[in-house]
Image (cartoon, rainbow, N blue to C red; front, side, top):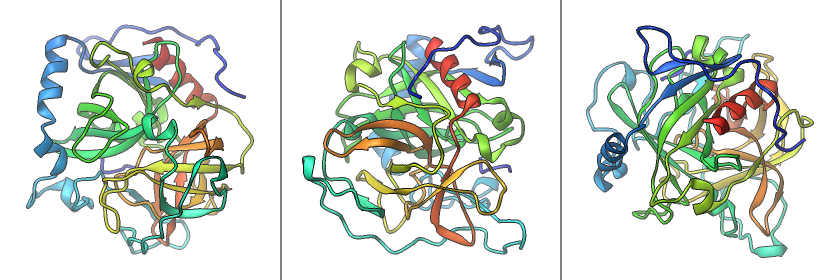
Length: 344
């Protein structure tokens, strides 16, 4: 559907990185089932992206009064890339946007005694690695500035960020421009630097037809301040083909009411399959709103250390159930995307 726009185990790819086809110098297949796009390669290109994201642009990404297809598709007033909302079949739904759920209370989370209760949305107050590895993504699609969420993950090149496919490429449409990741985001601060994209990767089914089961993007980023991303903040492990239905914690920076994008918010609970049978995704009770797209879902998560295993990212909600977030299952296709990204 077209939008608005075991642990790591290295396996050989069916094909290595290949050059771009004639007439398309920046995009090409990266491996079997993976499509790539070259972003900011040179120092000048990186400098331009860094200069683009002024504090004013970051604070007010979407200009007021914007008209056109992006707005009519359901833009978020905050500048956050709107959550993708699907209508289950059957019956057909008439609602085109998810209603914001009431704000859930802040659940105090402190060190080793952190509660492991389920929550559909609360501020993360325990600290730990997740506060460094999770961050906000700033990007431009169709000339409009947006914000998503993402996570640094452990990789051989120390440079891989995982997020939603629609935070990297508008399905079969355009790739994002001005893409930058701010790990450990704090209001008005970039405590660990800003990491620009050098190469982007999405599953071929997402690039071909915006297949909701493959709403996944991975980005190899450039160093910031002379340090690789992994050197600056570390990275969460990433897992593939793990058992379904496991408990998970989902993190992100929701920016639409009742949230404002300034704080790291989380959900936690058991996962379940797609009751509508439209995707291979799993769902979790979660009130997070626009801006949380692409935020990591962590299994085997330890609240005392803030470490876990990324097994999905926030993707979409159904129009008749705004209290449940869905994310793609990380299987063989996700592994291929990751392998391509960590080789970039």
